[in-house]
Length: 92
Image 1 (cartoon, one colour):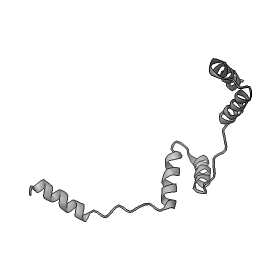
Image 2: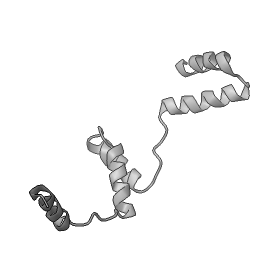
Image 3: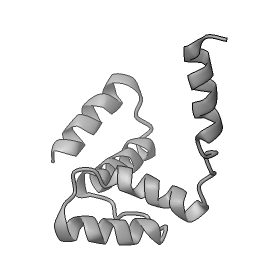
């Protein structure tokens, strides 16, 4: 056995086995990743609601998108007509 293979083998034996994350640890990891770029009170508020499993409130743009989508569907718009309607609706 080569020296490199022996060292790798010994290192693998000494390394602790990777433990599975608990659901709370997994949630913390996910929320922490999603909170990237947030700071101060905004981050605290986000992390608190995320760890509780609460859904974040929709932003104004998301609300517009939902509303415009419903309106376009109600009018049975498709293709270019739908695109034009959505563009106008989202701008207004």
